[in-house]
Image (cartoon, rainbow, N blue to C red):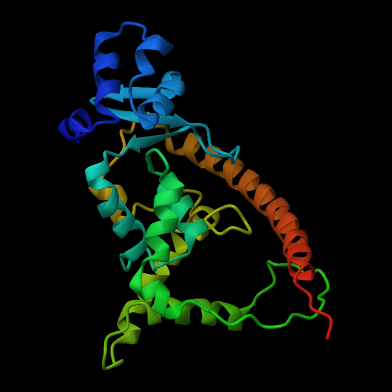
Length: 261
């Protein structure tokens, strides 16, 4: 990874500047690419630990500051494939895929690359809905209420993306797809099901292939349990607030699409 970053046209100069430990002026950076200039503007959050990472302050107060691997251009398609096309990623949409990739990786114009990759994905294009249905006005509802039928529709779409031609092995994919679902942040709660259930995330294949440095000190069991309990309470509180806001936003968005018949 270190050599790939050094050879990258956009990330390579950052390596030189970090290794020299000499201040770099705006005039010196001006001749480099827009990507390099954008990284330089975030200089204080660029960390060298054998390879280059970006330090990210999470939106959720229960999370510790995260490190994102600065991805060289040669690896971006592979990461997009792992985080979207792979059966462990389940062909989720732009928003969920973006949140998954941001947990671990960063590169210049990443969101635009994700959008383009998903819009050109053959499996997603086949399943994409093209007909606009008329909407009637709805009352606000609690989005956390059990919706078995709605989830079965979601799971059905996930299965369709990987089902084989004879359609006889669809049940084989369910455990893997459920793992992908549990490891993906839900837009309404702001957390993944794993985070809500376990208080932590479960390592997914892309995290095992590109591991981030870990500097967490070992804690006594009692201290870990107490800290986990406090974090879980905070997670539930934030999730409830997010659900309320999500319900209100969904109603507003729905009502703006109402067509008088």
